[in-house]
Image (cartoon, rainbow, N blue to C red):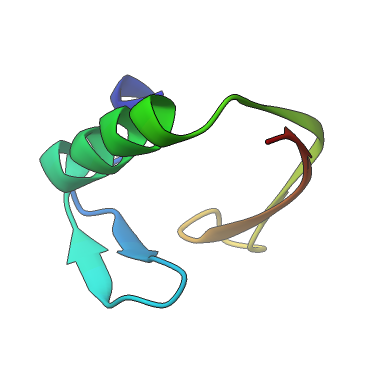
Length: 63
């Protein structure tokens, strides 16, 4: 998943702070994979009109 995002990615982690960059995002993904058994479904990606920003909405299934 990290390969699909820009190196300039900014991520606001729930109950945490902003993290920046692909490497930090990959670390976040690895941490979450170790902590949870989840599956994301009904993923909707909503790009801005100019394609420079996007938001995502999804359902988290699992424990």
